[in-house]
Every structure is written in structure tokens, then in C-alpha cells.
Image (cartoon, rainbow, N blue to C red):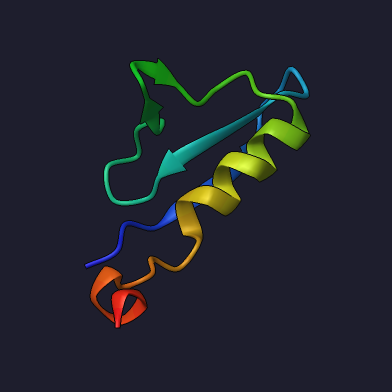
Amino acid sequence: MMTAYELIQEPTDTWAIFEMDSGEPVMIEGRPMIGLSETEAQQVYAALTAPVKDAKKSAA
């Protein structure tokens, strides 16, 4: 099952990405995805929600 994510604008006008199931910030390489610029948040969110390509299909 895919994890659902949510972009949230923080009170300080920065952005955060949370896992909806756990309610916790997404962690990437040990860094919580909080305090991001809007552009950073959109880029990370896009990467997290991009469809995963099946390696078996692309190798054929």
C-alpha cells in the first residue's frame, strides 16, 4: 500500500511534508521535511508521489 503525504504551510510561512498515516514529518536522510521553502516542498512532494516504474517492464 502506498503512503499518503500532505503538504502543510507552517505558521512561519515555511512548508512541511507529513505522512498522513502516522501524522509525523517525512524523514529523508535523517532530516525531517519541515521548514522548507515552497519550491523545496513541492519538489520533494513530487518525488514522493511520483509513480514508481516497474524495473521488469522497462528492461524488456
